[in-house]
Length: 376
Ligand code: DNO
Ligand code: MN
Image (tube, rainbow, N blue to C red):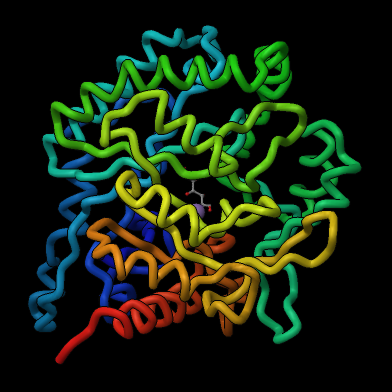
């Protein structure tokens, strides 16, 4: 198992590689070219520049006697253009053009040495919460999902107006103002696309891209829908054990795999994360291990610390299942709460991606892992 940490890049993250170096056990930096829009080609020079930052040491590092470096094996995410998901020309790009760019990006990443590329296949938006700094009983804040609030807001524009704007200028991935300007176009394009049609479009994507993944030895890893159920009447298909199995069956290549996010997966009542780990082990290339706590019957939840007893996700059972299988893929602690000085305005990290709780989470996950695997 390789422990990893998501980093948003120089100048784009309040956390530095130096900070991450001091968390014991981190081998892999999970990165992306965050300025790229879905559908855009990632050029070799841009990839090389970012990977050098991660895998190398600066002059200053050397002078200070720093020797620890990271690998840059995992990219999260290369986002999928809406034309691929809907099968229609969208935002001026045809599906074929978007597929060409995706394939070429995989090729460029593979040639640079990247091993795993994460993506999600959610319609229109990436993850959704109703509150990004919800106060917890201990004074920390956490990402929060109020099911009642979402149930009352039947169209996404209302949610944006009433909830997200209240969160200040912070935007969630996929909810950038430039994208939101196209909301009517998205709503129109998804008319008549049900779950079966969406799986069909998904298969077109996999069949087009997987041969390139095989050729350049890049494993594709889908992140489950977050939260793991339909929103605004749009189809979500990576939300349950059956849904995931169907995605894996769309293209049986081992390169068609999972970034199994157990926090997202567990947001659907009845989903069993330990069972999912055991069932899909052979196809899990990357995994996010985090915890959530349900707050009511409607399914509202708060993100909580990684310890199993803090919430409803059996993080011990998950790590035990990975340890017993001799899992050789990548794991990261995913979101964390905002602790200590991270609650203040100045230098506030992006929601869910502070330093302290993710560092604590790593130590917990490694502690559990070690208890099953370590010998002196
Ligand atoms: C949610 C997060 C997501 C994830 C993307 C992957 O649990 O891990 O932001 O990074 O959905 O495409
Ligand atoms: Mn995740």
